[in-house]
Amino acid sequence: MQQQLTKEINRRAFLCNTSAGALSVGAVLLLAGKDVRAAGAKDDSANDVGILNVALGLEHQGIAAYTLGAKSGLLQKPVLDVAVKFQDDHKIHRDLLIATINKLGGKAVDEKPLDIYAKALNAGTLKTQEDILRLALSLELGATNAYLAVIPSFNSTALAKVAGRLAADEVSHWAILNNALGQPLPNAMMFGA
Image (cartoon, rainbow, N blue to C red; front, side, top):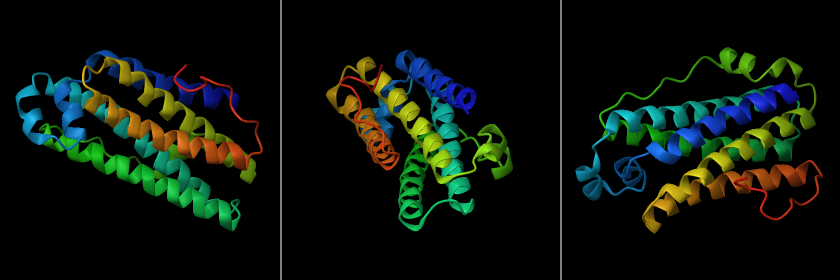
């Protein structure tokens, strides 16, 4: 399981490192719903589409992870309800990314079949509710760190706010999962490291 967690964190780090220097003002403005201002800032839309597709691929994977957890029969009712809620949040992120990619004239990456995600996430090793929660916890931490890492690259507080709002969703998910696992409170400055 540790190897899988490391693999997922590395994927999130790739998104983070790629996005920090390459995500254009146009793409972020589109994410923020600022179509008019973004229209003049589409100088590198092909690169933006590529980066946004990496993020979209990760959102597809997160949605699949929650689907696998929900279908496993291992989640107790209250935990299942929370997992479905988190999955809905990731679907909102997915839809936002797809809309932005389309506005940039790109083609959004397709969602893969569930069995592909199951293999990538090593779902066969998930035998308990705790196993599923630990996987979800690691995915949410990776997403948090990826979104936080792009904040410093923005010149505008409005652009930083978009990444901050996405990171806030992920931190919220992480905190609830961490609590459900009975883990200690995190140390100060844990996120974004």
